[in-house]
Length: 371
Image (cartoon, rainbow, N blue to C red):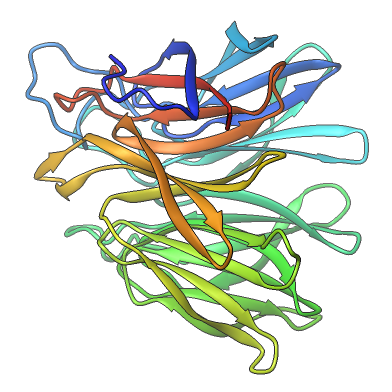
């Protein structure tokens, strides 16, 4: 992908080949820093381009970090890869992979998703989870309890009876077991955080409302609606003065929002609208000079007639609001990761589609510098 919109904040360090890259997950095993990249599909020669087409019998890429660059290290079977989540329990390292589908058309959305454990030499399957159109794993803790949440589901004709709610699992000391269903039909994302003495879990859904859940000591209870539809991702931050906490809500339609925590009301209230359609994922970058929010965009239009060749946004916090600082090119942007770099923060950004709607896009590694 040619960088046709150079910015002063981002310097391209590396283009990493991938096919339908859907996420970028940093992790470490035995002192080796890695990057996991699940891949949705491979292009099928001689077939028309379609963002929901392709061959889903894919592998997850594991790349080894060398300074500010990444080199191939290993692969794991991961059909229809949508997400990867790494976490530790004690001295054990796990890698959960979400698989949305298998096959090359027609597709099977009841494909299981696998939790792998590092054995000292490789990642081996540890536990298999049945699911339907899995989109994202999220590990989090409350006190000494470990939770692993799966966002899943897709509301498409012919699969009404197959769809399932999102599911939160809990660690019982030997494995993860079902803990609580979260109502959903086309779930995308989770975001755990604490504010005002409460532990919250935000859940994004495309066709149902995106809802903020509150931990009541025994289970997660609905606290407030965050978006009525088109939910994709979240980010929370406290302003540099430490006075207010904000929750950014990314929506793929033209309606992303920045909410502010109102301690008196015990809920989030509207603070700012972030214009522009296509939002898929958010990430925060803190430098010595400023706080930034990066929003990566996936497509404009519909899956039947999409535009993937877009620009994504970098916002700078300015006193009491987010100000657009710069834009940068993405093609079907899907995810972001922020890493410590040799010369400042690294921004790793995955692209799931090429400009002509093929899967041969890739992952870009940028150096983030606010001179």
